Length: 108
Image 1 (cartoon, rainbow, N blue to C red):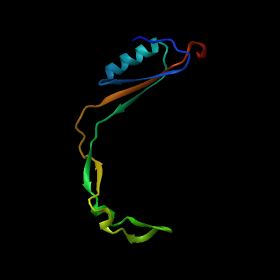
Image 2: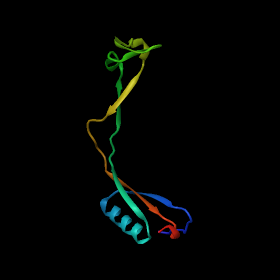
Image 3: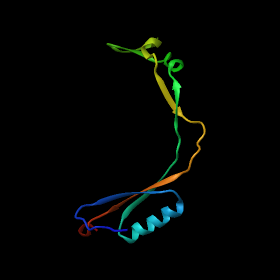
Image 4: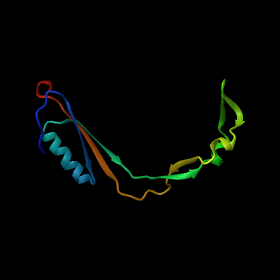
């Protein structure tokens, strides 16, 4: 890992496919003077298309004076609209993003 000297704070983000690699990355970042090291797990969860018509009958219609409560939106307004929702099954591999900050030598 090559770390150039800088006069401003430097941020880095690393991607790791396994916990073991996260541990090695965090150790290397600490050895090179990085601080505020934080790791987040990311999970793959795709979005699936869903026809909007069944959902839109309960939405209010926008009018000049604001939304009119209790009056459903006409479906013709949303012709061809598609919404998304998260997939029910998550098939994939987790991964990790690690963020860290390197402060300039005079700020430490």
